[in-house]
Image 1: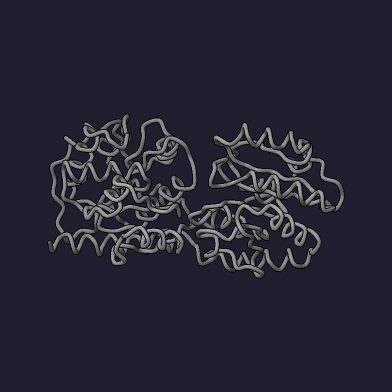
Image 2: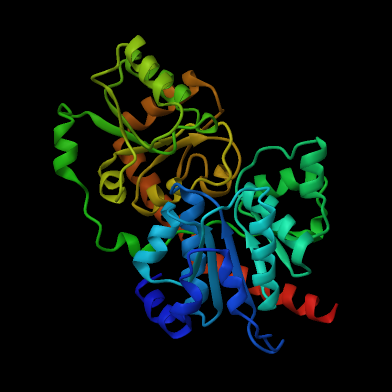
Length: 405
C-alpha cells in the first residue's frame, strides 16, 4: 500500500484548528451532529508512549481509512512516539497530556468528543480499553470497539471480568486465531468477536536495500550465517530461550552470529546471560533500530522465540523479504508460518528444539531458498489493505446497528 496517499487524504479531511489540539479541552470546539447517512467517524485511542507493533498498526489503519475517504482521528499521548509520527505526517489527531487508564477527567472529555461527532471509539490497547469504558460510562452512549493484540489468557479476577464481559464493548477485534480463542475461553460471546489480522505495507519493501556495511562489521567468516530477531526485550518474547538455543546450536557444531534488534526490560538479564555463556563475540544486542528493514534484509535466517505472541508482524516483514523463519508454535504465529513450507516451528521454551531447527536450516541452502520464496507468497494474505477494509466494514455495521437502536 503506497502511503503517499495519506498526506493528500488527510489534507482533504483535516482542519488544523480542530485536529491538532494539544489536549482534551478541544472537545468544547465541536457542536455538530453528523447525519447517519455519512460514513462513520472513527476515533482511535492509543495511550502508549513508545513505538511498537501496535502503534504501527494504528498508524496503518488511520492512513488507510483516510485514503478511503473516511473521517478517522487518533487520540494519543502528547509527546509519545505515535504523536510525533502523526505530527511528522500531518495526519489528523488529538494529543492528550494525560491518558491514564483511570483518568476520569480525560475519560469524560474524550467521551464528550466522541459523542458530539456521533463517532465510534476504537481502543487499541489494554489501558485504552479501560479508558474507553470510563468514557462510555461518563459520556456515552456510542459504539466502543476494542482491539486485542496479545494471546494472554483473559484474567478470571473481578477487574478482568468487568472489562471483557462488559456490554459497553460492542466488538472485539482479534488479530489472530489464538487471540480469538482466548477471548472465547474468557467468556466473551462469539458474536462480539471479529478476527482482523494485523497487516503490513508492502510498498515499504520496494526500495529497501540491505545494510551490507553493517553486516560486514559483524565479521562473519566465510560460510557463516547471520541469525536475527526483531522484538521488544520483554518476558513474553523470551529471548532467554533464543540465547540458550543459539548457545546449544554453536555447541553442536553450528556457526554464525545472532543479532537481536529491540529494547526493553530484559536487557540486563540477557546481557548477563550472554556473558555467562561466553557468547559476547557471537550474540549482539544493538537495541532499537529505526529504520529496521535494511538490517532485517541483511539477515540470513529470522528467528522468533516468543512464548506468547498475538501474531508477530516482524515475522510478516521477514517473510515479505524472503527470509526463512524459525519460530515458536504459539499464538498467532501458526496463522502465518506453515511448518516445513515457509519455516520451521518449535515448541516454546525449548532451547534444544530451537537449536536443532537452526542447525537444519544452516546446513541446507536449498531449503532456505525454498522456504524464503514460499513465505514471500504466503505473506501476501496479510496485506494491510485487507486489515483496513475489514475494519471499515465492521465500523459501518456497528454504526448502522447503533443508529437503529
